[in-house]
Length: 174
Image (cartoon, rainbow, N blue to C red; front, side):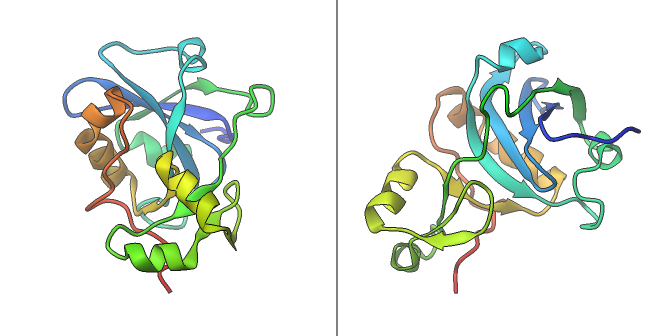
């Protein structure tokens, strides 16, 4: 299998037979599109959609990360590539938020700046990201990522915040 470049778009066949779509930003980061479709979509159609959720995801063996052969073992099908620079697609700032430690999350006011490193921000900037549903989390493997999507189908279809409970771990709890 050839090298997988950032901007690679994958189609994920869900338990109900519908399709979800993700875009790879780099070795660890994925963006979930705000579409669940009965039919397979093409890249041109996805360019009209928004990415609504961003997660760091590590592979089953935690060594090969996002190599195509590992993804292929699950229900992920590469459908093409998007030039992230040309279409100005990037990882936004994401709040590090733990719903089980709300007070600590606000006290820390930490974000991941465009997918690179933690920084502390003002409470206003932090709250603004939370209000937009822009939170950072990590999913341990692709199977859990699929389960996370399956659990949130209705939220994705209705542009509502996704429920990370049971699937997403957070950072910045110290």
